[in-house]
Image (cartoon, rainbow, N blue to C red; front, top):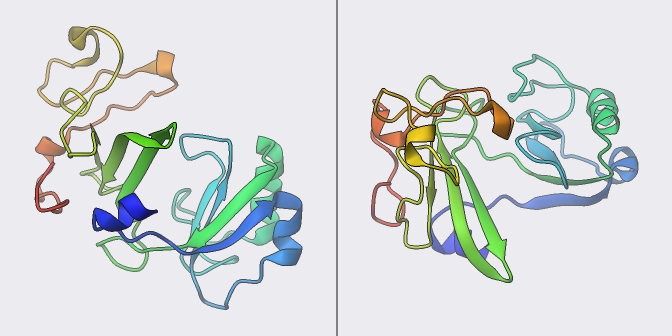
Length: 190
Protein backbone atom coordinates (compact mmCIF):
# COMPACT_ATOMS: atom_id res chain seq x y z
CA UNK A 1 0.00 0.00 0.00
CA UNK A 2 2.72 2.48 0.94
CA UNK A 3 4.73 1.78 -2.20
CA UNK A 4 1.63 2.35 -4.35
CA UNK A 5 0.79 5.59 -2.59
CA UNK A 6 4.36 6.89 -2.82
CA UNK A 7 4.38 6.09 -6.55
CA UNK A 8 1.24 8.18 -7.05
CA UNK A 9 -1.27 5.35 -7.45
CA UNK A 10 -4.55 5.51 -5.58
CA UNK A 11 -4.92 2.39 -3.48
CA UNK A 12 -8.50 1.18 -2.93
CA UNK A 13 -10.12 1.05 0.49
CA UNK A 14 -10.70 -2.45 1.83
CA UNK A 15 -14.35 -3.07 2.76
CA UNK A 16 -14.23 -6.77 3.66
CA UNK A 17 -11.66 -9.52 4.07
CA UNK A 18 -12.84 -12.95 5.08
CA UNK A 19 -14.47 -16.22 4.17
CA UNK A 20 -16.63 -16.54 1.07
CA UNK A 21 -19.30 -18.10 3.29
CA UNK A 22 -19.44 -14.85 5.33
CA UNK A 23 -19.63 -12.52 2.34
CA UNK A 24 -23.42 -12.47 2.07
CA UNK A 25 -24.06 -12.11 5.79
CA UNK A 26 -21.17 -9.88 6.93
CA UNK A 27 -20.47 -7.49 4.05
CA UNK A 28 -23.13 -4.81 3.72
CA UNK A 29 -22.34 -2.55 0.77
CA UNK A 30 -23.45 1.05 0.68
CA UNK A 31 -26.26 1.25 -1.91
CA UNK A 32 -24.96 2.47 -5.27
CA UNK A 33 -21.32 2.18 -4.25
CA UNK A 34 -18.94 0.27 -6.45
CA UNK A 35 -16.59 -2.43 -5.30
CA UNK A 36 -14.42 -5.29 -6.53
CA UNK A 37 -14.63 -8.82 -5.13
CA UNK A 38 -11.34 -10.72 -5.36
CA UNK A 39 -10.83 -14.34 -4.40
CA UNK A 40 -7.48 -14.92 -2.72
CA UNK A 41 -5.16 -17.63 -3.92
CA UNK A 42 -6.24 -17.48 -7.58
CA UNK A 43 -4.55 -15.68 -10.47
CA UNK A 44 -5.04 -14.22 -13.94
CA UNK A 45 -8.36 -12.59 -13.07
CA UNK A 46 -10.04 -15.77 -11.84
CA UNK A 47 -12.48 -14.99 -9.05
CA UNK A 48 -12.41 -11.22 -9.65
CA UNK A 49 -15.66 -9.27 -10.12
CA UNK A 50 -15.65 -5.54 -10.92
CA UNK A 51 -19.05 -4.17 -9.89
CA UNK A 52 -19.15 -0.35 -10.26
CA UNK A 53 -22.82 -0.25 -9.15
CA UNK A 54 -22.58 -3.07 -6.60
CA UNK A 55 -24.38 -6.41 -6.61
CA UNK A 56 -27.17 -6.52 -9.17
CA UNK A 57 -25.39 -4.06 -11.45
CA UNK A 58 -23.03 -4.36 -14.40
CA UNK A 59 -19.97 -6.61 -14.09
CA UNK A 60 -17.12 -5.17 -16.15
CA UNK A 61 -14.67 -8.06 -16.55
CA UNK A 62 -17.30 -10.41 -18.00
CA UNK A 63 -19.17 -7.55 -19.69
CA UNK A 64 -22.55 -8.65 -18.37
CA UNK A 65 -25.36 -6.16 -17.63
CA UNK A 66 -26.17 -7.59 -14.20
CA UNK A 67 -24.50 -9.84 -11.62
CA UNK A 68 -26.09 -10.65 -8.27
CA UNK A 69 -24.42 -11.72 -5.05
CA UNK A 70 -25.88 -15.21 -5.59
CA UNK A 71 -24.16 -15.45 -8.98
CA UNK A 72 -20.85 -14.26 -7.53
CA UNK A 73 -21.09 -16.77 -4.66
CA UNK A 74 -21.96 -19.61 -7.06
CA UNK A 75 -19.02 -18.72 -9.30
CA UNK A 76 -16.62 -18.48 -6.34
CA UNK A 77 -17.80 -21.90 -5.11
CA UNK A 78 -17.23 -23.42 -8.55
CA UNK A 79 -13.66 -22.06 -8.48
CA UNK A 80 -13.05 -23.54 -5.03
CA UNK A 81 -12.40 -20.11 -3.52
CA UNK A 82 -12.64 -19.92 0.26
CA UNK A 83 -11.47 -16.38 1.07
CA UNK A 84 -12.17 -13.01 -0.56
CA UNK A 85 -11.23 -9.39 -0.33
CA UNK A 86 -13.79 -6.72 -1.22
CA UNK A 87 -12.26 -3.37 -2.10
CA UNK A 88 -13.38 -0.02 -3.43
CA UNK A 89 -13.96 0.19 -7.19
CA UNK A 90 -11.81 2.92 -8.69
CA UNK A 91 -12.98 3.85 -12.19
CA UNK A 92 -10.51 4.23 -15.03
CA UNK A 93 -9.76 7.29 -17.13
CA UNK A 94 -12.59 6.34 -19.52
CA UNK A 95 -15.42 7.08 -17.08
CA UNK A 96 -17.42 5.39 -14.35
CA UNK A 97 -17.78 2.09 -16.27
CA UNK A 98 -14.16 1.76 -17.35
CA UNK A 99 -11.55 -0.37 -15.68
CA UNK A 100 -8.60 1.40 -14.09
CA UNK A 101 -5.01 0.80 -15.08
CA UNK A 102 -3.73 -2.15 -13.07
CA UNK A 103 -0.62 -2.21 -10.95
CA UNK A 104 0.44 -5.50 -9.40
CA UNK A 105 3.35 -5.30 -7.01
CA UNK A 106 5.22 -8.56 -6.42
CA UNK A 107 6.82 -8.65 -2.97
CA UNK A 108 9.41 -11.25 -1.96
CA UNK A 109 10.68 -11.45 1.63
CA UNK A 110 9.33 -7.96 2.34
CA UNK A 111 10.93 -6.31 -0.69
CA UNK A 112 9.39 -5.27 -4.01
CA UNK A 113 10.75 -7.61 -6.67
CA UNK A 114 8.86 -6.40 -9.73
CA UNK A 115 5.80 -4.45 -10.78
CA UNK A 116 3.32 -5.44 -13.50
CA UNK A 117 1.43 -2.54 -15.08
CA UNK A 118 -1.51 -2.94 -17.43
CA UNK A 119 -2.72 0.21 -19.16
CA UNK A 120 -6.09 0.65 -20.88
CA UNK A 121 -7.56 -2.75 -19.85
CA UNK A 122 -10.40 -4.15 -21.99
CA UNK A 123 -9.70 -1.62 -24.78
CA UNK A 124 -8.15 -1.95 -28.23
CA UNK A 125 -5.03 -0.34 -26.83
CA UNK A 126 -4.49 -2.56 -23.81
CA UNK A 127 -0.77 -2.89 -23.14
CA UNK A 128 1.46 -4.42 -20.51
CA UNK A 129 4.92 -3.87 -19.04
CA UNK A 130 6.95 -5.28 -16.18
CA UNK A 131 9.24 -2.86 -14.36
CA UNK A 132 11.52 -2.67 -11.34
CA UNK A 133 11.16 -0.20 -8.48
CA UNK A 134 12.96 2.50 -10.50
CA UNK A 135 10.45 1.92 -13.36
CA UNK A 136 13.08 0.31 -15.61
CA UNK A 137 11.57 -2.17 -18.05
CA UNK A 138 12.18 -5.85 -17.27
CA UNK A 139 10.21 -7.21 -20.24
CA UNK A 140 11.14 -7.35 -23.91
CA UNK A 141 8.72 -5.15 -25.88
CA UNK A 142 5.81 -6.15 -23.68
CA UNK A 143 6.80 -9.83 -23.62
CA UNK A 144 8.21 -11.63 -20.65
CA UNK A 145 9.41 -15.19 -20.36
CA UNK A 146 12.46 -16.88 -18.94
CA UNK A 147 13.53 -18.16 -22.35
CA UNK A 148 15.32 -17.00 -25.47
CA UNK A 149 14.06 -13.58 -26.62
CA UNK A 150 13.50 -14.95 -30.13
CA UNK A 151 11.10 -17.54 -28.73
CA UNK A 152 8.73 -14.92 -27.38
CA UNK A 153 8.90 -12.03 -29.83
CA UNK A 154 6.67 -12.10 -32.88
CA UNK A 155 7.89 -10.86 -36.27
CA UNK A 156 6.02 -7.59 -35.72
CA UNK A 157 7.89 -5.28 -33.34
CA UNK A 158 6.20 -5.10 -29.96
CA UNK A 159 3.92 -8.12 -30.35
CA UNK A 160 4.45 -11.29 -28.36
CA UNK A 161 3.83 -14.74 -29.69
CA UNK A 162 0.95 -16.54 -28.06
CA UNK A 163 2.10 -18.50 -25.05
CA UNK A 164 -0.38 -21.39 -24.64
CA UNK A 165 2.15 -23.33 -22.56
CA UNK A 166 1.95 -20.51 -20.00
CA UNK A 167 -1.84 -20.63 -19.97
CA UNK A 168 -2.07 -17.53 -22.17
CA UNK A 169 -3.55 -17.68 -25.62
CA UNK A 170 -3.75 -13.98 -26.42
CA UNK A 171 -1.14 -11.73 -27.94
CA UNK A 172 0.19 -9.07 -25.59
CA UNK A 173 0.87 -5.58 -26.90
CA UNK A 174 3.86 -3.49 -25.90
CA UNK A 175 2.99 -0.09 -24.49
CA UNK A 176 5.07 1.63 -27.19
CA UNK A 177 2.44 0.58 -29.76
CA UNK A 178 -0.39 2.44 -28.05
CA UNK A 179 -1.89 5.37 -29.94
CA UNK A 180 -2.58 7.38 -26.81
CA UNK A 181 0.41 8.51 -24.76
CA UNK A 182 0.94 6.53 -21.59
CA UNK A 183 0.10 8.17 -18.29
CA UNK A 184 3.08 9.59 -16.42
CA UNK A 185 4.30 7.37 -13.63
CA UNK A 186 6.58 8.92 -11.06
CA UNK A 187 7.42 11.78 -13.47
CA UNK A 188 8.42 9.41 -16.26
CA UNK A 189 6.83 7.37 -19.00
CA UNK A 190 7.19 3.63 -19.26
